[in-house]
Image 1 (cartoon, rainbow, N blue to C red):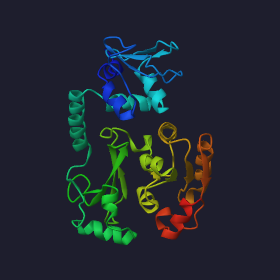
Image 2: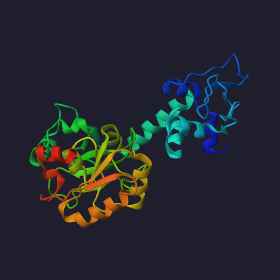
Image 3: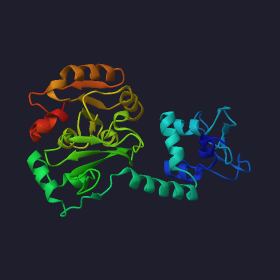
Image 4: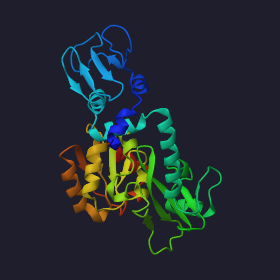
Length: 305
């Protein structure tokens, strides 16, 4: 049995429907043993004619004859892509499988983060972190806002560790030098360690979808300056994978602003042109060198565009 078929077979259908607010019946009129029924979402059914087989998760409406599998039903209920529907299957596996998956994630998470990584707790920020944030004009609360970590000694000595999220899962990281003396200020998670490489995704999508606006910036310090809703490309050169990731994960009804560094104006216009096929897009040309140099008033004006 393929992995997708296993996900379908072990899908916790009843819990999923409960959390979606969909009423279901496992006995009574129109219900067959081994099936549960709901009101069909494809027709004007009000007598729970759509049955879902509990074994293979195929469905059929005995009123309008619509047929499909659980992926089709999830997409119908949530108006989402195939990829998001598959993620729903992963989220709603039977309890024992969910526990195993959670344990695997925890182990992978620990393996993914650098040696010597420690989360930064409020009131216990390392002095090097305090100095770095003060020098860059950021508040200490930034550490908790973005769940930053720190390596005192190890693979990434004296670096802030920025967890990169896909949904709520840590899939990669970026290590930021706090000393100002490192040959490379920003180091990405090695490709063989990342669950998704930094240049194959865009960090900050969840907050942008919640805010209803997205500001696309180059680096994590630009993202910190702009606040939740800013999405980080991890560099001025966007990739085809990042475009595909945005199309898959960024809501189509939100407003998008491209805010790259001052020296990337042509690249910003090119990027906006690509995005314009799917979103209403604006491009901001900066007087200052980088977005992370903006004042609170300037940040506010950009969000109001």
